[in-house]
Image 1 (cartoon, one colour):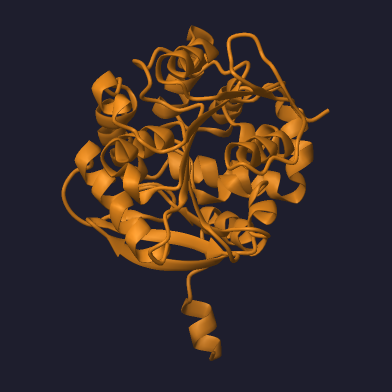
Image 2 (image 1 turned 60 degrees about the horizontal axis):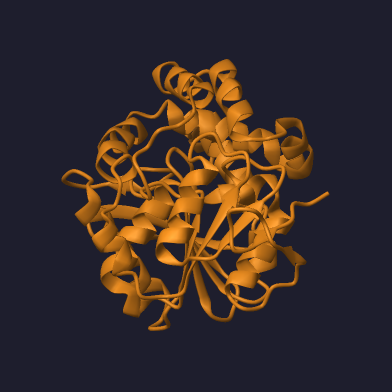
Amino acid sequence: MTTTERATSPEPSAGQQARDQLLSAMPLTERLVQLATVSTVVLEGGDGPPIVLLHGQGEFAAVWIGVIPDLVRTHRVIVPDLPGHGASAVTEGRLNADTVVTWLDELIDQTCQGRPPVLVGHLLGGAIAARYAAHHSDRLAHLILVDTLGLSLFRPAPSFAVPMMGFVAHPTAKSRDRLFNRCFYDMDRVGEQAGEQWEPLLDYALDRARTPSVKTALRQLIPRVAMPSISSGDLDRIDVPTVLVHGRHDLQVRLRTAEAASARYGWPLHVIEDCRDDPAVEQPEAFIDALRNAMGASRGKQRETPGAESGAEGSP
């Protein structure tokens, strides 16, 4: 590169620098794939049966960073940025339940090499995964719903709803931290566990919350996919081994929602202790144990939990 080229080349934005740091810390490769109407960034790595991880609303693929190193030892791990999230861009049309189900079907087609994957969905990702499974159970090996939306109407605790609305309206470091303190049971511990990746996670979350295309995607997906309750008829049609994983202290999707779904549909429920709505970030070891138990290969100690068929103990 010449001196002139160096002088005129734009510096990466703070958000891009944070994303680059997160990607460099994961044993995955990144590629861009056109899926339905979404130019989709997909992270992939590892060998073995495929597992697809769908993150929550307002998040991005790198939030799974704490569990990916364990999963790539035994699985082909596929982690997309959801439509309109992270670096995935909607190229035409509007997002709704039909478009995201089509998007997920094409993702599985293009990444799983004809093998039915384990499909793991968190919050909005869980609502997408459940809607997909209602019509395409034959394409999945297992369905794992993590603090998922869509099992009932979205009615978060006021102590969560107020900071959530504040962050959406005015995304600043202060409003982000106020919200994250309601997402995590112990935010200080989460930061210590994440180590040098914590600041990039915070920075990229704020950058995405300020990005107009992400705001547009959320305005379309939240009322059409996340907030409505999926019909019991659709949930009854899910014909693949299904497990619920839920943080005991979730303020966004209360534990009683998962307990009711477990009782109604016969889905085992694994409760993660000392955790709110993001077990993979807050209690990664307990989350991995719950996943492996759900897939029939648990490494962790399980115990009976009131209101649930089984519970996964949290990390000390």
